[in-house]
Image (tube, rainbow, N blue to C red; front, top):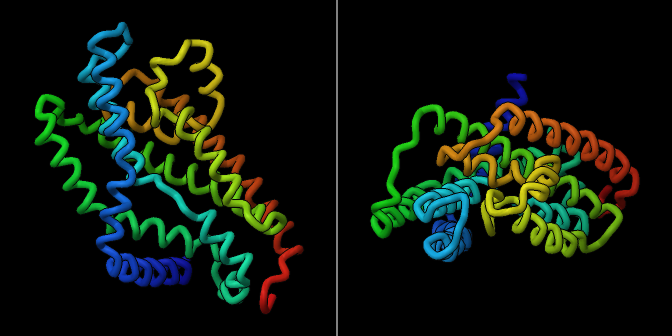
Length: 262
């Protein structure tokens, strides 16, 4: 375990230094995740004229929390892994005494750390523009919301990494991610909070992994009613299922892999 932690620490240090070389790009990526803020304006205005279960202020705070969750749960592993398989770059990593997945985990985590100052600055700017939306979450909201964000990151990463393993069989698997991303946007709570969906739709969605990627952690941050135990249990159950599928695809995929030097 100590040897593994030393290797992981070395990877994190290297990837953090790498991410700091692209500060301007990190700012652009942070701004690129501003779709929830656009949807916030639409839904907050709709709440003034319509009859929704959430008030205009609750919509504003919800989409700010969605923005925060998205900043910590954006994943791009499918594009990196596809390139590694197609170009044979996976071969040298297979020789290392560490699962290649940890390279991607370290790069994602260090990108979050390097992006953090920009995220905080954007949230501060948001509160300057919308001072009435300012609130201080309770320590329970912070603790549960942070755990839910960590779960959302792990689940989103494992879902996309599992899909990425199909690159052993399909040359351009990233094209499938484009369709998956559309489903993710509409069913995870990025476009609209699940409270505006019909009750039957919400009940069905509760058995899928999508609400636990955005809606569940965002709701915990703003204090919207949630079945906390069920939410974490479902998220962990899906995490375990994708991990099993991921390991099976990895084992089968390595038997087919014929990249340069493999």
